[in-house]
Length: 214
Image (tube, rainbow, N blue to C red):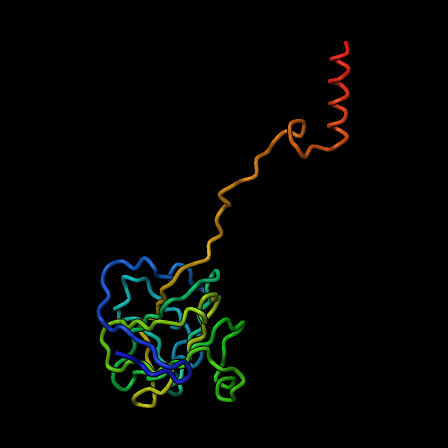
């Protein structure tokens, strides 16, 4: 099935049940202590939807919007990551949000005024799958999400128009880990190294010539 994107064309989503371990999960690279939100009925619930892979189908913990159907979840990472896809488990029926706007690498959370005034445009604006029971995967454009430090997720336009509910937010991708160079610099004593100081090499040559003369 596919979802229409308000600003990025078409994107495919996968709503089939995903089983087994997820070796591409970015859960351990999320700065969970710094996850926060806007317009949540319980502010502390922002981080409760960032769950381990084996808890993705849990419906006990969730985040719900406060005064209306809009809510924001800001997700920072502990290092730059490449995000290949996003996984969501959303509320059903009247509390199911139908639209998501994603803002990449905002230093601070992108608030509702910035969005409504057009001061900040989302990198991705998509229509969400309705009526899904399992976790749904939404592929993301590699060029836009190749070097991500944080994501601000704006959920809105719930079916009932009053509340939006989120059970699970997850990401798949890879990290940019610096590796040691395969060829390491060898430590060679200066007396034997080709780049030893010129004065030292001249001194050694003179000493050798004197020994030969003797």
